[in-house]
Length: 215
Image (cartoon, rainbow, N blue to C red):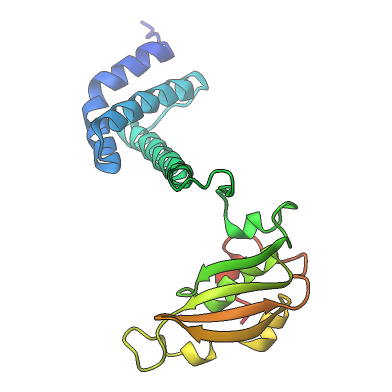
């Protein structure tokens, strides 16, 4: 006797019958919307069928489906986040004045139309200072300013112990930056001035500024 393997469509139907409820529950927990979860389940099984057509033979079917569903839900959340940023610009009636760019700063800073063209870049400085500086400098023209909102000063609640030594001149100089004026307006701010062009090698590849900070 010989057994005939089911066609991809038939195999997908069997997988759906056996596992769609658990996949739906997972998608609902990830997305919080029944409508989005139902769409994600459909996409999950479409992607599963494509995998079967390519000859994929999952060792553990449910685990395989969960992996596909997890990626689908991630893409749904990512798309929703992008739409939210675009819609916010429209709601504020800024569409004629603002361009929304969705990218890692390390990557966007190497795009010709974004590199070295801005007079002002603003950033929250609650992360590592070297990362903020390396990711911000490539966007500035010479004469431009990176304005950073600072954490509380030493002695204030939540102040990092290194707050007074956050901006190392020698490290900033590698990016063409220099320490500018600091000011307070209910919050603390620090200006970093672009005194020379940011060298072409910066920013480094995504994740590298945080793993190997310049200072």
